[in-house]
Amino acid sequence: MNAKWTKLLSVALVAQAALIVALHWPGSQPEYIHTDQALLDLESKQPDAIHIYGEETAKVDLKKEQDGWVVASYYNLPVANGKVDAMLAKLKELKAGWPVATSASGAKRFEVAEDTFQRKLELTQGDDTLATLYLGTSPGYRKVHARLNEQDAVFAVNYATHELPLTGKDWVDSKLTAVPEESISQVKINDIVLNKNGDKWDLEGLQDGEITNEEAAHQILASLADMRFEDVLGAEVKPEYNLSEPKLRFTLELKEKNAKGEQSLELTFGKPAEGDYYSLTRSDRPQVFKINANHVDSLLDLERARFVSAAPVTEPEQSEIDLGQKGDAAEAEQAPASS
Image (spheres, helix red, strand yellow):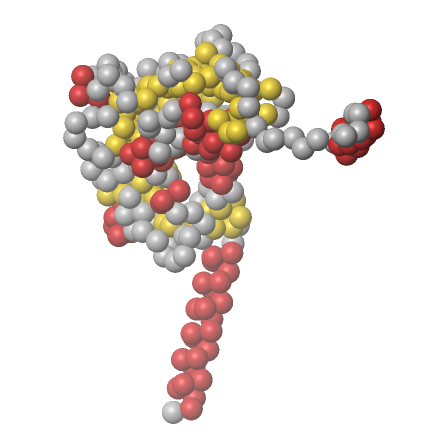
């Protein structure tokens, strides 16, 4: 019995050794098995368009233009600063490693097949497709199964599908509608005019005994600087946005000209009959933006009195008091004594 088991163990060891040699013999491994090899080659060519597909019909198109990346599928709004560069940098870091599957059935199981995927990423340059990458199920935290279109191998890479959002809004900076205080030299609201004077804001038309309430001025400017949009209502003004009878209008003079060569910017707010939001147009953009009602409500019914404070009463200097007292004493000395 011992001899029989010894013989079987010997055969098993020989088979194991043969398998190890075969796996490590030069040329015996498939080309896609290279630990630490980059999954995508993005060094030689840079994409000028990126297409992201989700399940069913969800899709986002990004396009590189002269002034930077825009979301072509979302009103051509500019992509948030650095967002595409960060995505491409992370894609360059993906490593192929060892495949977890090399068959069509494996691709379906891990949801990286042509007709079954969670994300499909196409990188193109002109008419050339640089790479097509499928992302599917997650084997663990911040990991996802991935497959290149021209390969059967499925890899587990350090990425996550949520890093490729499927709504255009998620690629755009929500503060696109904001106007930083430091970029403004004048604010007009109805008959209220605030001018930047050095580090201070001055209200036009101050009367004697009045000064500018700078705290109130900064509150308004802080609201403009934090003006975030929730969505884009459309690419053109429609009657239902009620912008022809605006609830609020700001006319801003900017310190520098914008891309159109304009130095004035007008913000117009309308209140649709339905919905708890305001519509906003900017004179430098064709889109109509959706703004949270709470943000705009705080800016309504602005009156001049809100920006005016009473000038402090200055107390007389001690020297002036002393002079006054001396004058009174002199007058008393010169006065004739009463009989």
